[in-house]
Amino acid sequence: MPKQHKSISSSSSLSLKEKAAKFKPIKDEIKNKSIHQTPSKENLIDLPLTKRLFVGGIDKSITEQQIKERFINYGKVLSIQIINKPWKNSLFAYVELKAKNELLLHQCLSTLNMLTWKGLKFRVEYANPNILDKYKQERTQLHLDRKIKIKERQEEKIRKRKKIKACKIIIDKGFYKH
Picture (cartoon, rainbow, N blue to C red):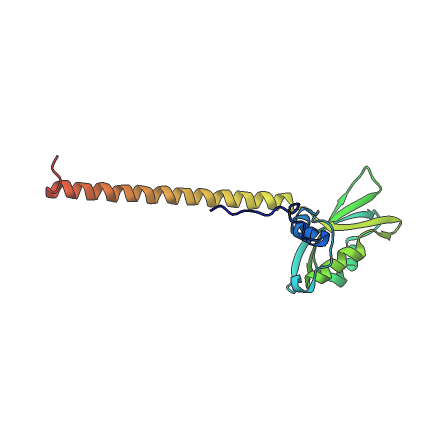
């Protein structure tokens, strides 16, 4: 007997809050992941996290050391890559930050994002993956996939050879008469 699903509209016994609660997981899944929400205690990751952050709105007079000093309170700065936009009066950077835990990373994003620094709005958010790292990962995966396919083909050849050998033995021993 097939399962019957209750539709929310047909269950008039549910309150509006209960109906909304049913849609909450879907709504949370749809939300933009770049919005920084404070992690709840039960979902808190208390392990060091390494994240690549986009930092925009940097004045051209700011140095790499000054950027590092901004982030040092939230974890260890592993690398900073400053990129110049010659057509604008500002720079942007990618900061790789190893935060002690998820809460510190969230505090970093919420505290530093939209901060005015030397007359410009300092913007901090999660960065998209580095395209070179992404390509390297894709190449590695393709290489692994090829190795797996080659191994599968070799195993198939071995199975076929064993079958043929078994058939030849059966024919040679006279168990099979044609």
